[in-house]
Image 1 (tube, one colour):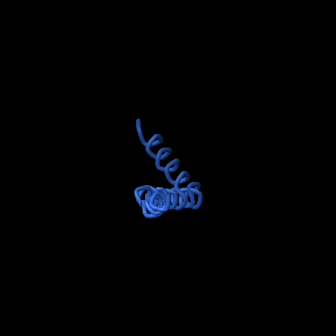
Image 2: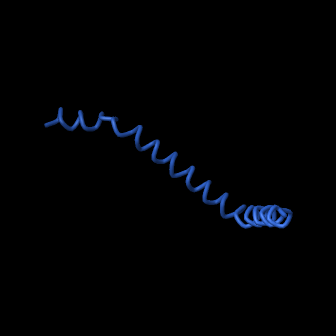
Image 3: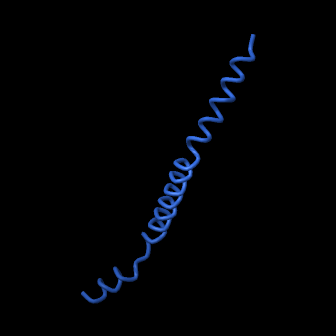
Length: 58
């Protein structure tokens, strides 16, 4: 029984996936925070450009 417990303790096969999951979660949090901070300003700029393009077409 002790050998089985040691094999389970030393098994690191899921470690890489857990690290990728943590990195993905961190990137998602940073992206959401960036969109929240810059979202309204970027939206206003895009709307202004769209309005200008729409008004200049004959």
